[in-house]
Figure 1 (cartoon, helix red, strand yellow):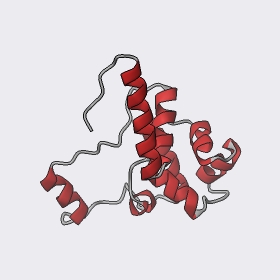
Figure 2: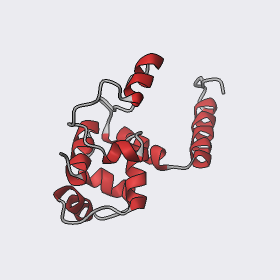
Figure 3: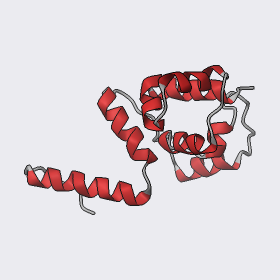
Length: 134
């Protein structure tokens, strides 16, 4: 069974983040985050919620043991299969700056995300680029 410290390290590595990047997003020292991964201390609920949002998973998924065998009738897996959903939360081949941006964006509220998107599209429009329709 995976402990939360092992799960945090597993997710961080899986998504290609450094301890420093995660600590920066949580607004804590890198050493504090390193303690989370070694099990010396545990993140508070606010940090866990931010981490779940950043990794685009539920708090339940953050706290669950991914190495445990899944039941054939796991409802979440069945729903995902029926809907054709794939895990779109993976971040591949992005620069450090892009990962920081995505991590920060995921920790924002819906209102903050909307403002970020509006700003991004206004910048694109100003420079003659095309923007997606809203």
